Image 1 (cartoon, rainbow, N blue to C red):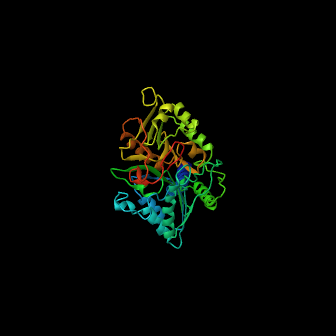
Image 2: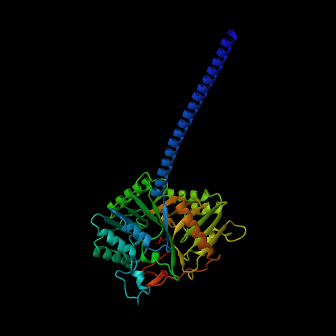
Length: 440
């Protein structure tokens, strides 16, 4: 009997142990399940946070990403669209807005096609100005300066006639940006602010000829749209100050310039350009209308002392004597410097002032490589490392470079009186360049 009781007790104990084991397994599995659910929940929260962060970053990148308009390839439509889409304001500070007579003369005087004078940018400015909720303000350069003959004022007359006819608020810059009393060539900068939210920093003017792209005429310029808050805020301050001081005012440059902007006149810009060149690891590609013989030595030295591969693409305004003096070994197997001067027979004219470093950053704007531009004028340049800006400019440089053979130039185009093409389909009736000047 005792044995039976003991066996039943053992069986009960085994069952109890088995049940306890099942309970422990259940509890363990439940805890594991809870852990899994917890981890899964945390992972989902993390994924959501990451997704949101990525989305926000992407939106910020899209909203504030720089972009570039390449001229004259892209035509005037992108610039006109920026103006047409303005909701509240257009602030334009430009060296030249109209250089062709306004209204256009007969085609017997100036021969381009009628579409040449459709002037989409001017039309866009008028359209924006006619909107009740959009304010258009324009500062244009003074063209009677720096030894330019008095007839140079015709540019202002054309612009003033256009502005008056269309009730556009426009002033001629009469600010002296230099302490040199013999020099009064003022605002050479080229920029536009849209709705106080984006600024377009330009290497070119907004003349009609700047957008013509035909088999006979192409002009290379870049118009970079920047939307970062610091740059826009600073450029708003600069514009407001220069507008206020446009009539015989005293020029000053607002402080706290963002690190990606170069505002002239400021001798620190010479150092900034030289440093930009010197910091190249592999290559520097340079678009330049010309290097003047008085270009600051620091910039020439940065080019000559660089170990990077340097390619320089120049307009037919470049003096061969300057290149020969500064880069005597260039275009030889012993030199890391190669330059090409685009001949006047080529439809492409280089007007842009652009440095491309290692294919990853650019420095561009209105500054020509002359003492006048770098020491005396109101100028605006910018530095960008945005892929959306650098990559298209690098691609365009490679295309333009490969389209021209290595060549030198032994003489300069002769200056002529009356209307003549400074570059094809872009006419002036005053002096276009000189040894000390800073034109376009």
